[in-house]
Length: 82
Image 1 (tube, rainbow, N blue to C red):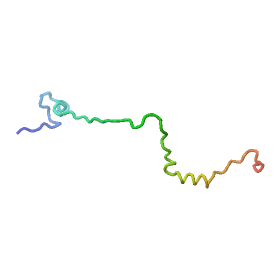
Image 2: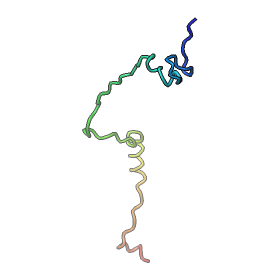
Image 3: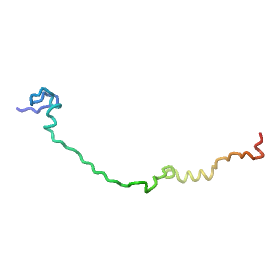
Image 4: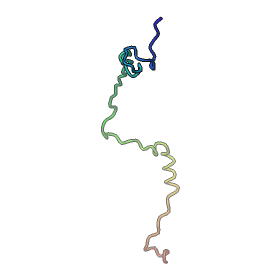
């Protein structure tokens, strides 16, 4: 009965090393995955989307119309005497 050599067994080549550190790469076929990449869009031809406007567009416009921030008093304002 022939038993399969396991990773931590002594290497059958007689080097004295463990099989995983000696001949395991010789017995296993190297399978590499190839990945194809393609450029979807190159350069700055298009502006990135405004995510705030995209998510809250109408709500932002409505809030800007309703809740205008208070204006700072100008230094020449007669009510602003100190």
